[in-house]
Length: 558
Image (spheres, helix red, strand yellow):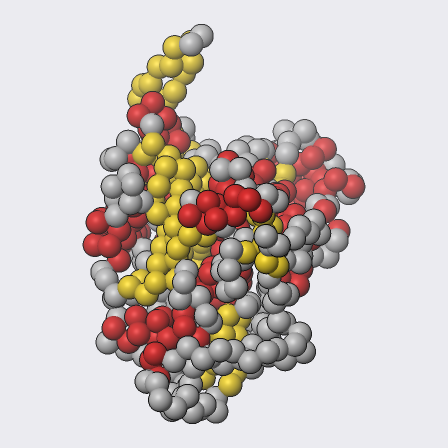
């Protein structure tokens, strides 16, 4: 039998500013909710046809390949600024699906990728799965990935999964709101993905608790709540399958960035600190919380990609099971000693892991790593954490996602930003938690700010490693100890002197500048001080996407 070949997808408007607001009359003889007319033939120059009628006041928002119906009132939560979040998630889930399906003997690719293979489907309208072996296409769909979006709102993300991510068996779009669940069902029908996407109106935690049996677990769970994901984490780490992907968004950054350390502890089991590195610390706080909750069930996490973006953070982690690996958990967590005067920080691991031949010994860590007062400025320390002290990213996985996005830039509306951010992520030092900022170091000693390349060059000349961070424009991640950083600042101040008589004797600046530097810094610019992402002028940090952007108001209950 001649295999069926799927037609090319029509081009779809991916800008969020363009919406359709004119109500369309439903087909006669059928209720609006049950309409499923045959779509009209389309050409690449035409927009996606509407398959069901619009209700009064509804608009159609187009993002990626999805065309989503939205009520005019604030009945269902939607934030257009998070298009980057959804694009990045589709890219990550696609790469995860590619790896998982490869283990099952199936090669999946996305239309538009450089290496194209014939598109083969079991029937017209079947979920697209580009497969290198057409004879096992049906088994690949039956054994495909099961995805849960726990708090789906309009279902936009789930619809995009169904339309854009190959290798899926089912997508469950759940929301506790009856209005949201009804809208999800309409959007699934409107985008003709009812064969793949099921709407659900359940409490997200209860749904995940019911699916925690080994045979019922999901391969991918996506949690993007309004505010904190803390109430859902315990259920999520149980309901995701072995080696499955857990995607979590946190928008309660005021809590996680240090404004309410006590609230952060009640939600995540970690005290946040108000410091320049607060955005990376927030990532490490949620990873600590996930690993701690997973450990209760003899499970542990492996971060694939963790990013701080705009007003939220987003983490992608795999969850595995293994009692032996869970024993490493304490040695992966660390307390943070942060000086309130100069901002120097030190880490105290919670546990110690030593290897003697084939024998592994676990013991309590020894400390503290600092004295009662900061050795640089004489001020006291704040104590924060515990936080995740290991790598934030799996660089090999990130490089695969980056390669896929770069090779198919027309797939996502925010492809340039994804490429820029992931490029920065691959350049970050994996084994160096948190960062300093050059402007804060300069502010501490009241001197002019050295150019970033010169400061980075000084550390490289001294034999230390240094990188930028995707979480902050002026970040400086380095394995150089604080004393080296202050020596570099002392050397810079000698050529750019401050008025010492204006410094208070009790100020951090007076204490730091009163000590002669041991290291004689060289500020000659080195070629390797300028990372590739900066040389290529990639879109690394986005400008404000729209006026009054940020977290949106919670949707009306219903």
